Length: 85
View 1 (cartoon, rainbow, N blue to C red):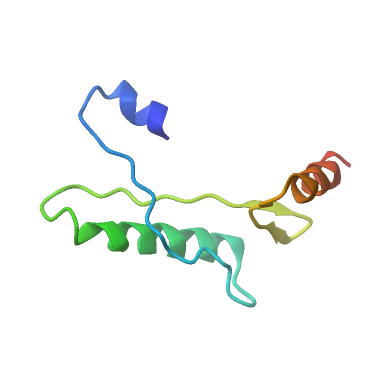
View 2: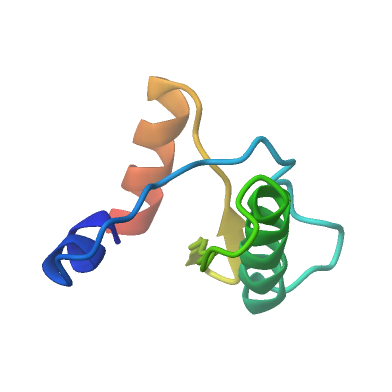
């Protein structure tokens, strides 16, 4: 995303707000990413009045299950192994 914005050759700043990115019970992946993108933008909007704020998020889904951030090497390896078949 940073590279795409850089291609526009316009000044911009990337920030990562401190929000809870956990999915809610029963929340579909597309609902999760929409909610998180909105919450991220809203969290930063107050700090930058009058500026364009772009909130974005992405999620990986495997066999209908949302894969969270692995946080450890072991969990990352497990997720990658599951995704590779």
